[in-house]
Amino acid sequence: MAPRLIDLSHDITDGLVTYPGLPVPAIRDHLGRDAAEEIYGPGITFQIGVVEMCTNTGTYLDTPFHRYADGHDLAGLALERVAGVPAVCLDRRGVEAIELTDEDLVGTAGHAVLVRTDHSVHFGTERYLEGHPFLTATSAERLVAAGVACVGIDSLNIDSTEGGERPVHSILLRNEIPIIEHLRGLQQLPADGFDFTAVPPKIVGAGTFTVRAFAAV
Image 1 (cartoon, rainbow, N blue to C red):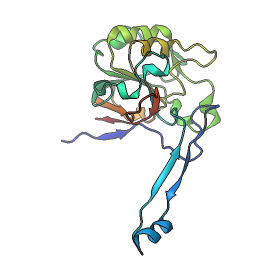
Image 2 (image 1 turned 90 degrees about the vertical axis):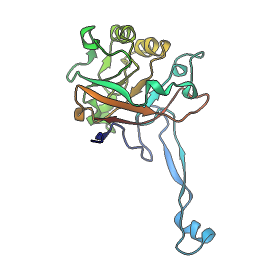
Image 3 (image 1 turned 90 degrees about the horizontal axis):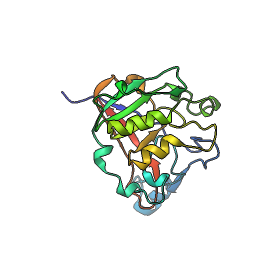
């Protein structure tokens, strides 16, 4: 039986606000339907679009270069970390500062660890931008010790945004563990027994970019 594919990404729309203060995407036609007919003939239409957006838009992945000048960028990302990776989903609804334990991470070496908070239901609203769930630095250290492939969360940021420090980003990315933020739909996933994919374009000199994240259950 073929696996059921579950989309875990937010739609990208013109003017979408993902994170306060960042530029919003602008989506427009380079070649529209009417103009295409003038080029190709009556009834023959093509659309070619132009998308201008910040690399931190919608559901996106962070590589080490996002945090560290000497870290690898999107072009250096190993597909083994983010494509068809065995995964677990940890339910941490109702918790703001999420402390993962060693017991939570038993058997997660080489796995994607997705943290469900359900904060994603507020995406696109002011509520999403305030009081969001996040992981603690200790959780990040335990994820590194467990040898996970990547870490995702359905929240505004994997770190607290109360101050400028970003210990979870710092710890995970220094250890080349990609981070996927702004996931959605994690309530559709089982606790384990599924695969996770979140592959960005192969862009040299960029540390983050939008992904089409999905699970194969």
